Image (cartoon, rainbow, N blue to C red; front, side, top):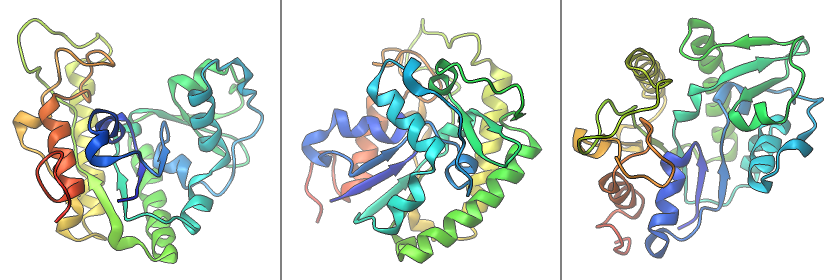
Length: 245
């Protein structure tokens, strides 16, 4: 089973936790909001040498260079898993239309973006740009002949933990969580117009609790082990760790 990921740790982490069942992803495009992924214009003028992590440099470079569509044109995957958690980031739009995702990794590069427009997440402008990007995404997967292989990892930000005593960092306040979930509901509803119901992977409330103990720390999209086990079931079509029928 060859799986490509356009999304976040929400989709990627299960491959590390359950490598025996899932193997490794064929490709992973992270830290990219869809309006940046599908921008026809690369974002130039960013020196990535200040980013110490090779992985972080790589994901920012793929975002800036718009690497996803060229990859998609020859992608050999059984599934393309998409999640929308990276829509939490702002967009940086240059005067020439080049668009970048303002991830923490992008910020660490120290680029001068004073001449650029900043599009805040969860705003009408962000939704309009996402909607236009989704239309380009659908056209791209159709051109590659893989629309039916797309799977939407339909998640939302958690509002509660799986146990007492844990707290979200202050910047994940209830208002931000609510606005983010409203945005996710809007984009998922738009996706439903172009995809079949079985292309959406859903989870129950207990599976979408935040983990009080998580390798990346507390966050509304760092879920409990039950979530990742369910993800394995979605990919394999069987029990976590079991073979695909």
